[in-house]
Length: 492
Image (tube, rainbow, N blue to C red; front, side, top):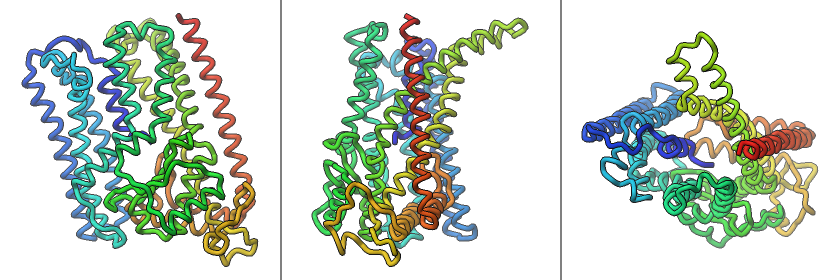
């Protein structure tokens, strides 16, 4: 999943042109001091909050669950403040104008873009540094994991963000620094949009290669664990390029899968996950990642984002028409009409509506997909014994057994995956009831698996609900794509 704050920062820096972008600023030195001041404010807030959280943990007077909630909310507030400060630096202080016009770096292409983005990069590192201080305080209470180091922590966060954002950054560089230089009227060509979409699609398909290069990974060594995972993949009909061990300095317990095509598909398991969990629990988490591919979640997400871009295009046209009509209503003051009908007002409203749309629709879809993958992960470690429990470890007793394309679901497999989820929460300092926009709370996911254990027939109903959800949402997005295409065709 793309780091949302970084994506918003790119939009603030390069998606919305500030006024008089090519005009030099007379008091550039003062503006540079203001930029440093904004960064310093974020630094003070970040370190002050982190030290306060660390003191709360060390004193032990406040329940750990409450301290974790305060930490999570504080990080969210710091992220919002960081984006507001960077937006102020770009559009009020005029950092981009200083770099391009005052310093004459506008013709340097990628270097110019990097310097424009530098304040947010510094802000992000400062916020991560503060998070490290707080996370280390929480980590001292978890005996399973050794203490992390600051340098490794910051390097890991930087490489993780870079690997995920590389396709978007490359597209931005190609569009702003290559096409704009050699084809100044590129945006006016009717084929520009389709070519850019196709280029982004190709970069997304190759994204696993960027992740492999940017993240510190290596092939999972040969041994009992790798053989177990490979046999589980064969039973599930899952094809992949490699299973990678993700080196995080034992600071993160997680797993992920990248790549829609089998030749570009990797499953990543962090070192903390492999060192902390039992082999069968690792296999359950591995099965969860397989589930995302088996149910074609990555493909559907790609379709969802393409359809959502079309939906937002229609939304933009509707907002522009609505605000234009509202600004011409008799009795509306001139200043209000200019604010409503101006470009800034439209862009702000569109960003807010798009944010609400993704928060509600994508969040709900993602949480349902996570539950579907949870069920698949449980199936990967389930046995075919109708009287389970006692549970039978298929890998130990019948490693060559196949299930003819349909994996069973047993109480033992559901309990194994539930235990793995609880370990993930404990080692990542997550409260079980903490709500997550994309994944839901660990407690709700465990409760859902317990409900399936008590009534196995619920699984069929859940899978039917997922089919209906995907079908209805898919139909709406197809209609949005068609309507957006017609709007662009007749709008020429």
